[in-house]
Length: 424
Ligand code: PSV
Ligand code: MN
Ligand code: MN
Figure 1 (cartoon, helix red, strand yellow):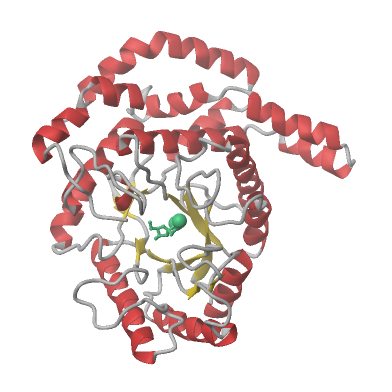
Figure 2 (cartoon, helix red, strand yellow):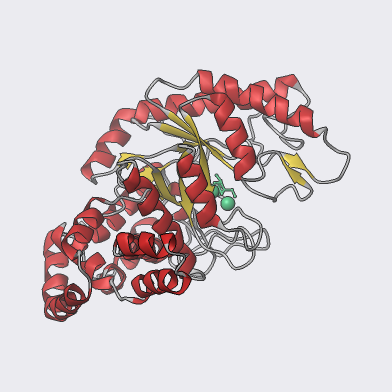
């Protein structure tokens, strides 16, 4: 047992008096602290199985020690995160980086850690050793029907794994596109992709959802067949009710107004969920909120505004997931930091005085509207996020406890000093 209630309890007892002072101050500054804490307590963010190892880039990879070598060890790692923050209660698998074999025992193990299975992800952007056809020129868009069929069959296989584990959604990200002008007939590529997606959609169980991720470029650098939110929306509207768009924060062209995209997708009832991460340049997959925390807050501001208006539940109605990985930090510390940043942005958005904001907007009082948002963003709400953890038996300071309790060393002893988790 790497972390138990006693260790967490002692850590909290040590930090509690300082925490209470901060909490009281925050409560004196913010009107609705209890309501915010309650929402935070219910909030869960799924952890991708591929973020549990050091990510690497195409230039090199520097694996850390004690990385998980199997699905079981990945579940154990997410279980550790969840014990620390009580907000990471789901894991998202990527097939075939993960190949679940015995559904029952994997489900039992996840249950012991209090984890559910979030969206399953298909992979038609790499060739696998046992694969008949190559995806070099695309998968669902491919000019060759046999290749399209292979990619469709793979997605159906992924759905079957998800059904075995109790997952309720499939996320499709395609690297399909072209590298040079003239390589692709755009309309044919669109049509082939649509027909392939329709076949996958037809295989979805009735209570499942399909999320279609978009990305403006990479690995194809001239065109991408699902390049932006408008293109994703055009596919999912044709697919039907169970299909919606997934917003990965790193998949936009520079300076895109992501919060406006979020508002429009919500309005169209086609916002399926998120891959949270942050970036300076492109799809950098950095820790959520590490470069542009104000943007993260503005995105949550639209979510709170748009979802509350239609009675949606933030904890249940959208797929919230992290999609970040990197070369230089302990992946578990990084994930704890991402979850914290997301919770904080959510708390800040919940603290916005909506009535006052609406009034300022109706009166075209630009400076006032800006003041309201900036005031919410600049008020330190970290004590509320910590309090939500305290009330759910998580740790007041997860990163500090992770370090102090020597969890990584225990993992290294158990799994080895050089281990490579499966993933990109
Ligand atoms: C592609 O860049 C992506 O964001 C998709 O979500 C993939 O499934 C994931 O990264 C793989 O790392
Ligand atoms: Mn993603
Ligand atoms: Mn990405």
